[in-house]
Picture (cartoon, rainbow, N blue to C red):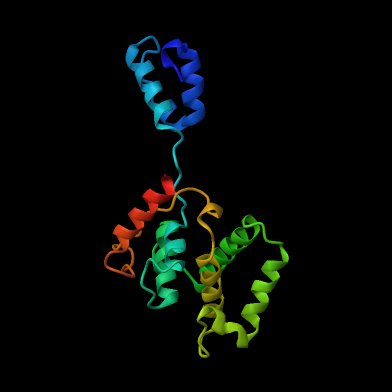
Length: 193
């Protein structure tokens, strides 16, 4: 793209299309000013802003980037982080609702037929199938659902998740391995190539 040949109006259109938030932050500039053109070009060169998936840490937990201790307590922390509310206000029902929504998205975005969601539900209701997702005999019904959801989410391909995944954060939950953050960054570099 040759920016020198583009009018300021064309640059505005392109910058607004690529990143409208950054574009509208330029309102303090005089449109005839060279700094305005430079800022527009900068937006275009950076490309579209990548949105962070608000469920990043739930996906990371499902994929074992975090240590699994008490699945309900861990999920309360992660859902609380996502929603910006204190864990004491999060019920097991809230967790199940959020996770089943993610499972539905995972199944439908992966190109699987909708009846796979029915099979997901049947696996939960048939106790002898709980071994498939690390269900324990003394797990409550809610914990069984949570574990089954996490099992499905652990298999979700990266391409079926909207936005970027945030890095695992040891301030949220302990990482599964000491070099987890380093490995995550290496994988992210490979994915972006």
